Each structure stands twice: as structure tokens, then as C-alpha cells.
Amino acid sequence: MARGKTSRRQNGRIKLGMLIFDFDGVLIKSIDEVTLTVYNATAGKLVTSLAALPKALVSLFQRNRFHVQPIGDAILLMNWCLKNYHSAAEKILTRQEFRTIISGAESGVPERTQAIYTMRQRFIDKAPETWMALHQTYQPLWSELLRNQNRPFVILTNKDRDATLRLCRHFGLNIMQQDIYSGDHGLSKVENMKQIQVRFRSDFYYFIDDSVKNLQELDAHLDTAARNLTLLFASWGYTGPEDPDIAQAAGYAVCKQADLISLLVQDI
Image (tube, rainbow, N blue to C red; front, side, top):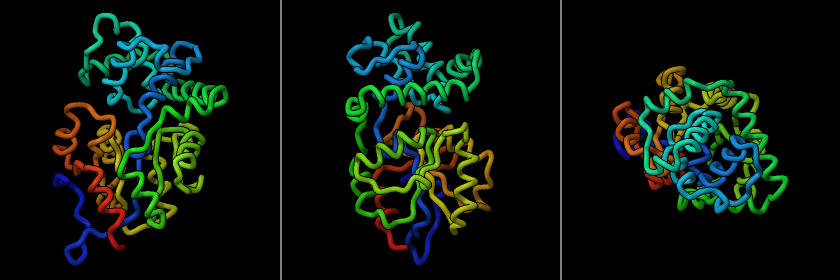
């Protein structure tokens, strides 16, 4: 684990505070489901097989997925991909190019986010087993989390709560609904993090996310030092080629799954 804002030691050992996990890209690999759901929300269709979409479109969207935060912006990315996958299937957008794309939005983030949530629920209602099969757990982290469910942890995600809970239960994680802090009702990760800190009043927290943007947003809007919040970057998630360097330069530890597992099994 690269050096960063992570020092929480007692007697030379890292002490376990409350673990706060992002979901997509950290615990669950959902890129195929997101691709289909966002396509459906953008195109106004209900396609349930990735094979029904052009391969170049799928590839272009997935290689640029790391730009998206919040999830409502995925519709804008898909719109761009639909216009450009024939001629630019291998392109990775620069950050400025993506900012230009989202600056031209004609609808607000809440409306776009709700469109994705609504289409996801339609997908689940129509073909629940097909929808579930589009997901995988990140291993070995998920298995270790199952073995250490006595550790204090919550999930903080931009995904809707129902879908998150459904996936947790399907893959064997016995988590209570109130321990999932989601993007429902337009709540941001900053707002949800404040709720977590008020509710648990832990001595300190670790939050692991695969989005540098999310970490920077939390850093900008929360007093991480006063709140004893350590921000960690997940190197195995939906990351761009420059993201680990950007995260490290910003002072966030760049983690492998083994680093998170070491926190799970560490004595409190």
C-alpha cells in the first residue's frame, strides 16, 4: 500500500476503525450491468443481453466508465459513445474532454440518476436472474468480508439501495438495510458520510473507493483530519490509467485487495 493519509497505529500495528466500502468497483464488479442499464436509460429500450449491443460501443463505454461520478453522468457518456463508437472505438477521453461533454447536459443529475434507477428496476422485474448474472464479486476481498462480518462496516454507494441489498444477499453478505448508505433521493456521498459519522461516532474511519473524484469531493467538503477519516484508493476497480498516480499525488494510499484484507483481519 503506497504511503498516504493512512497512519492509524497503536503499538506499531494498524488499528481497525470502522470500514466504509464503496460498492461497484470495490466489492462488486458490475460494469456489464451498468453498461446495459445505462444504454437502456439512454436509448429508451430494455435490452437484457450485452451481446445485443455493438462490441465497439460496449468497449468504448467501459474503457471510459472511470470518468463517471455521479452515476447520472453515465447517460451523457453513453450518448457520446453512441455517436462515436464507429470512428473512435479505442479512445480514452481526457478529463477535460469529459468535462466538456457533461457541461452540455440538458437535464439535471437527479433526473438522469433516477432514469438509471428506474430502468434498472425494470430490468430486474423483467429478468431478475439475467440481471443478477451480470455481476461478480471481487475476490479474495469478498470472501474475506464474509468471513469477518463481525467487523464494523457499512457500504457507501451511489447505487440505489434495493439493488445493492439484493446483490449483497445474493452473494451471501448478511448486511442490514440501514447499513447501506445509497444514492437514493439524490443524496451525495458527502451527505451520507456525514450521516455515518453522526450515527456511529467511531474514533476513526477508513473509506475505500475506486473513484479519485469521490475521494477528492469528500476531502474538499469534510474536515478529514478532525473527523478521523482516512481515504483509500482501490486500484482494482473502475480506474483510469492515470488514477493511481493522481490518487497518490493527492495523498491517498493506493491499495490492493490484500491491504484491505489486512484491515479486516486486524485485531481491534
